[in-house]
Length: 288
Ligand SMILES: [Zn+2]
Image (cartoon, rainbow, N blue to C red; front, side, top):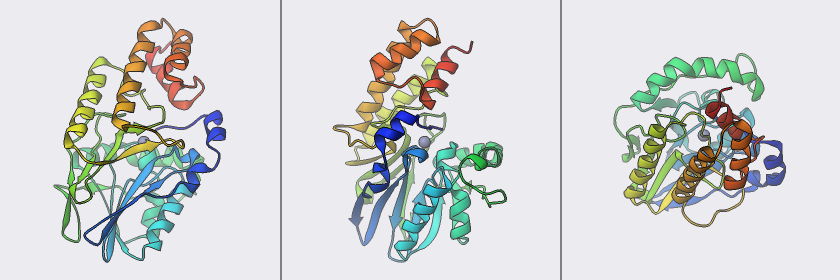
């Protein structure tokens, strides 16, 4: 999970709410993105809008953002058929409560490996966090079921990539050759500090870098990052993510405790030590 600090939220203002959706069209189908508010950690949901039906990838964090996403889906006039969840983090998961209430006929699915993880942690995560994120007690939340094979909408197939390491151990990006697009989820961040606390080992970093190489090799022209900061970024989000990982390792190597790591992160990465993701990384790197 990634929550932002007060300074970042103030800097961002309400800009994220005004960020226009990206839309690409192919074969009478459109690919659209929805970007969360600062409180929703600028997480992306991606929509494929077909001739009569629609599908959504990732469900948002807060009730307010999930409601705006539901409104955007409703505006298309299409029937929401499928909601696909890329990984276990609550910023991609909590909004299922809103979407399942608004679109009771929709199917909620995930890659079988992710579905198994969600079965273990999803319901408890929703119950633990719902009070802080606007979800009223008793709101419905649906456990995604295992999807074998590709995502599909009106005969178009979208390739669910095998689980790979990003800001957690098992994330499943989606390749959409029809749109020359890749929904990278939290393997790739764009212009925003990475949530790094779950992947601090050299092995996890090697895995994350291998994932970036694999996504780059897909060669999609359009890449939708899991999170996108409010200031438009020049250049490749994959390169941004690599640079951040490199900077983190440098900061860690130069540090001996939480205090020196915090200042190295600030100097090398421009990270705010009070930000949620920084605090979590500090605690994970130096447990005491
Ligand atoms: Zn995320």
